[in-house]
Amino acid sequence: MKRQLFLIFIVSLLVLSLAAGCAPQQRPMPETKPAPQQRSEPLPNTPKGPGNRVPNADSQEDAKRAEVLVDRIEDLEGIEDATVIISGSTAYVGVDMEADMQGRMTDVMKQRVTDRAKKSDMMLTRVYVSADSDTVTRLRNYARDIEDGKPISGIIRQIDEMFRRPAPTVR
Image 1 (cartoon, helix red, strand yellow):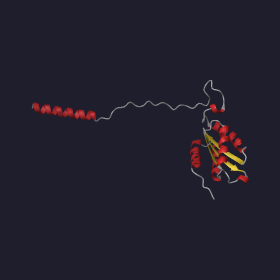
Image 2 (cartoon, one colour; image 1 turned 180 degrees about the vertical axis):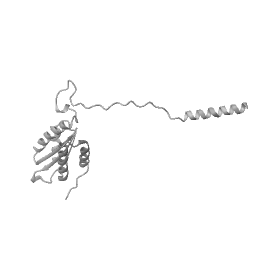
Image 3 (cartoon, one colour; image 1 turned 45 degrees about the horizontal axis):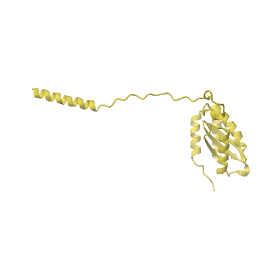
Image 4 (cartoon, one colour; image 1 turned 30 degrees about the horizontal axis):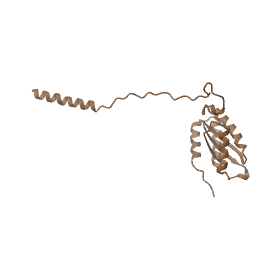
């Protein structure tokens, strides 16, 4: 009888230790902090200037920046019309070339547009430029949608995709 009791005790002890050893480890939950808010004004004692503002302060500011950029880009030789959409530190530029330059958007011309945009707006870090007529037309339509108050987040995703894929060229 003592032997059976001792055996039951040992088997019970083994089962309990196996059950405790195989239990998942309890880990503390990570502390979640809210995302930092972007500042629309510079920090105190920061000199005023275009390079000291924070991108994405609001879409109205981006629209004003785009208007200024359109004027500056249209001043370039060979460019008749420009459409610009700005989202934070990224500008999407569509240009219509003058009649004598039609179809001759070169890498040099794209670099001139990019340089002019970055000089005009110090907050820009990326500038996408296209002279493809379909891309420019779609960009104009997106700009009109933004002016009409449509949500900018979905539009920006579509524009970003449009500029990332190569435009077909006819030779």
